[in-house]
Length: 167
Image 1 (cartoon, helix red, strand yellow):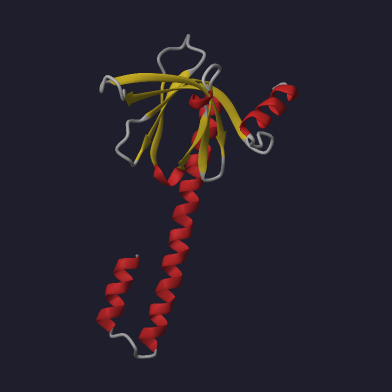
Image 2 (cartoon, rainbow, N blue to C red; image 1 turned 90 degrees about the vertical axis):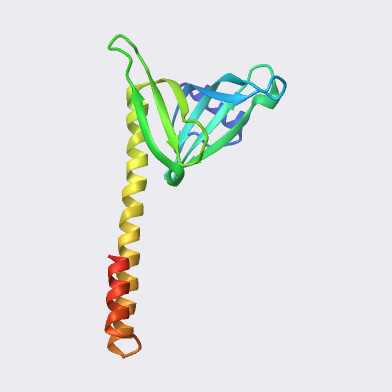
């Protein structure tokens, strides 16, 4: 990527692009119109920055400053990231990011395969780390309950119940 363009983007969005993997694409969202009270489709050019625990969506607007902005999607709030491959002749795919909230899935369009792979890799790495952290925390907690049981501060039934909960 052109170094001059990167510096321009860093100044425009006041964020660091050098330390993270990032890519350009289009985001499509359905929103309710405040005037007509009907769903309207909004399409924006965006930059996606992949962090260790979230992705940041930076919207770029040519005409209206109010349409610019950023949004963070934390991996803990994302249920899945899927690719809709529409054919072998397409140079890019549509990526669906499904979240735990009630909002519709976020659609990213014109995403290259290598960028999709990096996004999924970061998402999987985060989820694997979360599972590892959870197991370590449960083992530590179980050891504390075992110590309380050995000291006679918990009954065998209480310890067994806690053990089942944690494992």
